[in-house]
Image 1 (tube, one colour):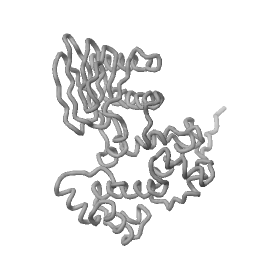
Image 2 (cartoon, helix red, strand yellow):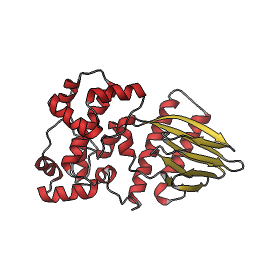
Image 3 (tube, rainbow, N blue to C red):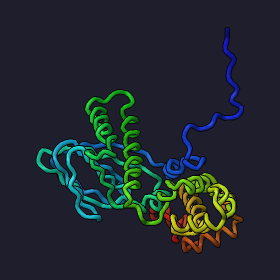
Image 4 (cartoon, one colour):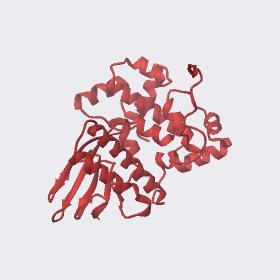
Length: 303
């Protein structure tokens, strides 16, 4: 008897949703900046200095390692990890017989800086913590893939770095040390996570506070108050910023005409030019030419 193929004209429901029924906002945000693990380097008994802009994680295999950043020095023991996702310049000093792995994170510069900039200079995870039982497993897998590389090892290492990044964010958020307003608090908020996901998926949409409040299943006033408290800015200001930052990325990474970019983020060309100039200090065309000539990429629309 031949089984008939199943008809998936209506896509199956996703297995993972946010607590409020929407998509996973943290995943959406990290995907929007194209965050991904890169290369891994193993170091022994040395001092290494890393410039500003390098987004790295250090995992200690043996001995002790000292990480010196703008947040001050941190001593790491075997099995510990330090995530420097903000990209601060720092120095790593290995003790006698120390060895550790350094993994890099790649991301789209214009999109990543304002989002990752809300993180501390270094997120430290102690491998002995009950809540960090995933870390020894991650370190073991890393050692295996580096010592005994097999087909697919590069992708395995990249995925391991992704997992370590997300787990470190979760642990830091759960620690209660995340008190400042920012996207991460909102992404992990049961009501606001779905709202952030919707805005990041469709920055060109003419989002009204009522629309966003409906997604959060809150009254208009309760939503606006909660959003401003958690994000540090009003819903309208956040939507505007996302539109302009999305447009800035398109200006730098594509050859699309300004008018098409304006339409793609929900503006007429004239209105877009005025809004962009207010935020970035020059017209879209002048800004694109200037930034490309300097080889720089300003990270966000000023608040």
